Amino acid sequence: MASISGPENPSPNIYIPPEWSSAAEAVAHGSLTSPPPIVLVCGAKNCGKSTFSRYLLNTLLLRHKKVGYLDTDVGQPEFSPPGFLSLTVVDEVTPDLTIPHMKTAERCLFFGDVSSKRNPTTYLNCISALYDYYHKEYSNGDDSSNIGLPLVVNTPGWVKGIGYDLLVDMLKYISPSHVVKINISAQSKNLPDGAFWLDEDYDGMVNLTEISSARQDSLNRSVLVQKDARLLRDIRLMAYFRQCFSSNLNISTIKELAHALASHPPYEVPISSIKIRHLHCQVPGTEIFYSLNGSIVGLAASSEGPKDLPWCFGLGIVRSIDTLKGLLYVITPVPQGTLEKVDLLLQGFIQIPTSLLQVQGSRSPYMSANVLSSS
Picture 1 (tube, helix red, strand yellow):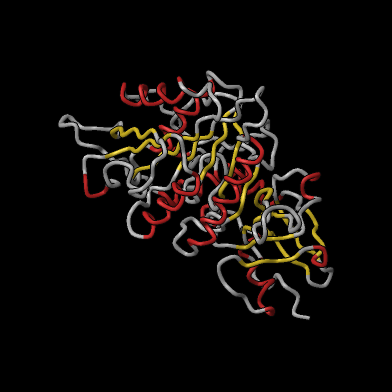
Picture 2: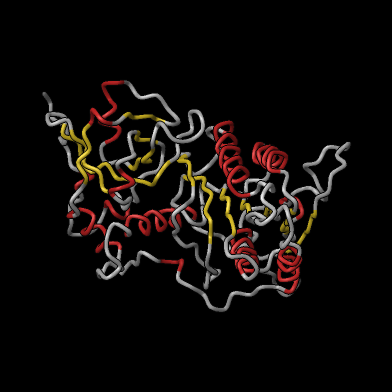
């Protein structure tokens, strides 16, 4: 029977090459300085960026009580569901390097899509806002008793065309102290050699380390593991909404989760108390409720965060809408105390996993017809 953890089950035999260990140790060895290191990890798709970032995070945590993690991969984020850009402060070692782990972010922004292609400007603005927050809260060197918080920046694997331009802009804005570039044997897919993002007249210092992908065949050629990105995103979403229930409950399969969500009492949200913002498209006023019904939305506070980029607290499923009573019914693992701050629903293109909608022998409430009153 299908499992919520699916293909992300731990693999204890993960291999960390000596080259990776040396790169991580070199960063960590010099991390007890002020200002703290800011390390950006980049490379082509499936080259091992996330695994190396987790390993580096663990290495830094052996020397620091806390380490920041800025996740810029909206398709395969580390600690949050798909569609988010986030800054997470991590205070414990990740025991299994093969799988992502859900954590509550210090600050996050709901981009609402699994790729930056649709709106690269907003994508960069989100990254800038999160880095500015980190810089303000954690990296100021005014207090000599606090050397600050090291930061690991994980990046997407889109490194060609517009993706390359976005990475260059990101590197220039963050200006990391260390850059770790992971190369594969297919040279045409790699980033350019050297410090490709720097202008010729740049006279500052940057530590650039180039390492090879960990997975190689007998001829030392990179072996890229082809991931089913859509399936992995669905699993992450299901793991997120599994948090609506106590860990003591026996919910380990997709069918069990689908039944649990369908019977879970939703929060009642007065329509008059919230605003609705569509992130990447325009929806006619007469169609707003139809577009919301059965959708996943970001739960945000309009008064918190940078201009036009409200801080988000998590995701919710709009289970149904009662226009006569003026109520939205929302399922979310976000605590009630935090929900009291929410006055803005952000709708993007993050969808309920189809596996939750097509459970055999069960009728999903999210696929019901005639939910809205005709009056």
